[in-house]
Image (cartoon, rainbow, N blue to C red):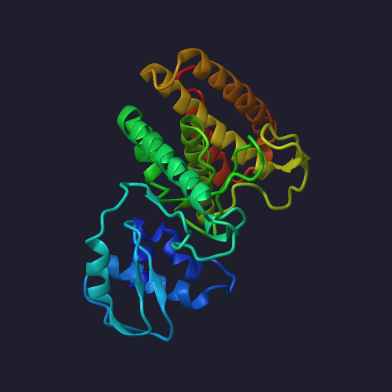
Length: 304
């Protein structure tokens, strides 16, 4: 079934629950294999039978999931129980990172002390995310549709570095992004930023965008250290979509105008810095890369 779904390009495969296939490390292997079976059963056209688990495991779903005791279980019955749970909408929140079951810095499940203060902080941050997500879906519908076409799960990160925001994504974990939840606008920008990376990862699944023999490094508008051309392309692509998002947000009056205007100017300035590097090094792009950059340039010109 998995091979057929991959051949058909079915969207449910773009999900962190397939990490048993896409993520090479062996940590939490039993849990991730079990989760893949459960997630596959959600989309299976016919029942997939039973599964035996030697120890208690967690069956994650967009509604949160359930603890499954050791023993033999019917997958269809498990899916029925999970499907009955309320979900958080098109973007599922996974505070305990149960959809991925990997080690990652700043996860809430790794907090050594989780008392009333930490619980209140996490609850406030989750409410902040839901407000940001709802505002994006309501006021920036095309942007929200683009986000959810590649991102299905959001895993909150603990704030550990003062005022700095953190976000991350990787091609080995499709459909999920990790981010701190500090402010509504920061959340929206991080969703756009990391979803842009997800779309680039999907483009790279077809083939390389940069000639792999090109090893020079360049100044990146988003990182202090010199980056390979692919790193600049990642920044350019993300900044193009961030600028487009800010343009629409300004038109919709999503937040006070002066603040958005300042953010938009800064995003466009950095975008043009990256664009200049990409354009001047176009000879190092593959054919797929040139097509990808041309599409990105169309987004970069939006609202200008």
